[in-house]
Length: 166
Image (cartoon, rainbow, N blue to C red):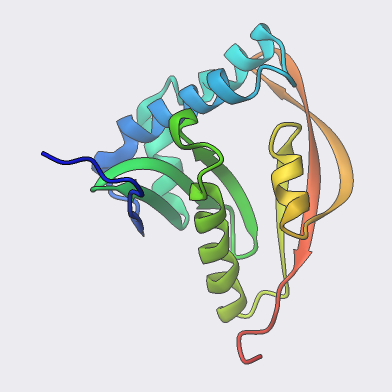
């Protein structure tokens, strides 16, 4: 067996069998990446959204969900809410900062633009906000949302998409 210096990432659609792994990625990302922005109680409440794995899987099945993989194993995912809003974007902490999130967002920006969307929005966590700002998203509104009995802050951000024929 030989290790690769630069693993090859790939994208594919969500499969129902992915749900348990995506729930693990969701929890690991919250636990491992958001500690500077949210306290333990907030992170626990946020991560509890994956406790009902059947409902979590159904969420992926209702909308477009892309799964990032390395050698066939899921390492991140992005799901949409409707035609022009990113619902969830999570990568495993072991690959954070290695282009997985950018690959997922690049793909969805191109796809939504090709489908005629003029803008793409996201409710970005405090942790994700700098990632989206670097990609050209602009904050439009600050929000607080209740999750599991805890208030969490986020920012609604928007990006104008280039037309597909340009």
